[in-house]
View 1 (cartoon, one colour):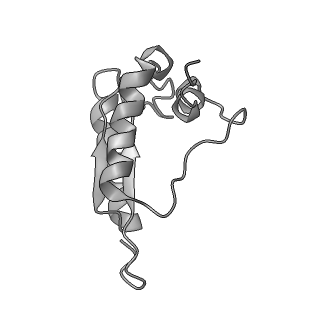
View 2: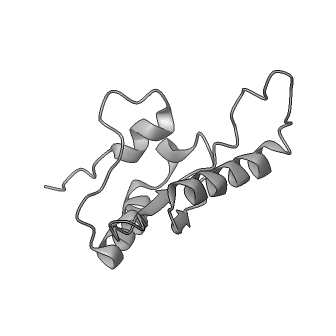
Length: 112
């Protein structure tokens, strides 16, 4: 929350980025340690930004496009209904550099 303006912020994070390829130079992580490092980085970033409501949705990195679209949409919709936000920020179609980001912003197709 922005303490000065009283604006609550919720961060709904689908993945931890635990499948990242960059382990640092010099190497500071392994496949086993990277998820723990990423979790701490996320928590620290939220702390610094003043975000107190962090929602970890627990989807495995690099698999969002393979998730059941209706189920994932339902989980995200439930958060939106609960919070009734004035604004939702997500990835812009066609400009995401990661398949998870592109899959995250997809809309459900209406049924005819």
